[in-house]
Amino acid sequence: MAQGDAKVFKKYSQMKLQMKREALEKMNRQADEMPLDSGTATIQQKYLAQFWHSEAKNDDSD
Image (cartoon, rainbow, N blue to C red):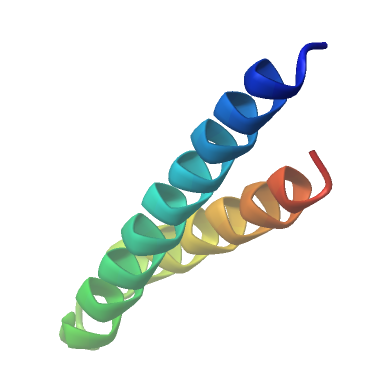
């Protein structure tokens, strides 16, 4: 891969990871703000947040 291509790919990967992190932060805030009586929704939000978090870790190794 050419050096210029590598820089572009690295920048793209960093932007993609940043977007995932921001989405995770937003989802965590939303989950934390949900009332306790909507337990199913809270559980779904937390599992989805964990999924995004694990995906972000996987992207770090790219």
